[in-house]
Length: 272
Image (cartoon, rainbow, N blue to C red; front, top):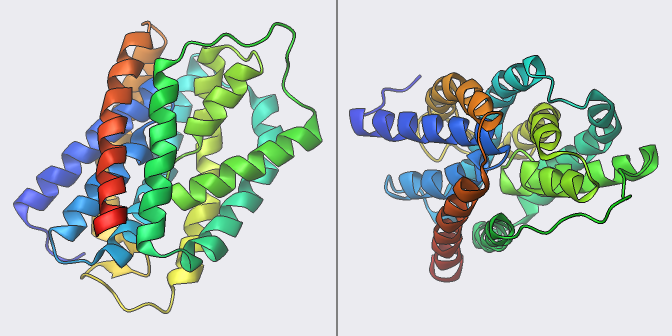
């Protein structure tokens, strides 16, 4: 692994710790927060926006391979994972993640991805402030419906470098799945999303010249290793805290952070 400067290591460790904690606590937020900060870190080291956004998205998604397993273990021990829903959503998730990572991701321009990312994390931020109750009697769709929903979750996650919980958790809660189970189940589906999308990034970026030492295609391996080590240690802590506290106020505070990050990515997309 190429030598990393001390400042870069500190930045990546902090990013991994906060991202891992939020992934365990809220079931959403790790990738959404990492992508703007990684884009800025790469931009400060001379990587043009056309590549920095894509590298940030791919590297953020790859870290979920590690974070999701750590968070999943903690949620499973607490009985918060609906494995029947994982089985229903997973096939579509894999197909959607591969389609995004190996196909659509390579076709998007960096600025287009930045604008797309800004729109979706802005939407996710606004949802943090809403407390709409689902209609009584609504339930999760059948197997075909879950496969279709999984395809949408996997595809959008592959384009955004997020674990899918920003769509999966609101969707499950809308279908009257308790928030505790929705968060735990989203941790479980994060792994197949990350696996499929990361495989797609490797395929689509295989022949690209490295933008920095340690970058292979769209994956920045040194950043991946540092962030993964930090996030894995914090995700179980976030999961334990999530089962013991009312996260409504924290979600709203995090929504403010996401709005700020959406504004930053909107600026990058519009002005480079």
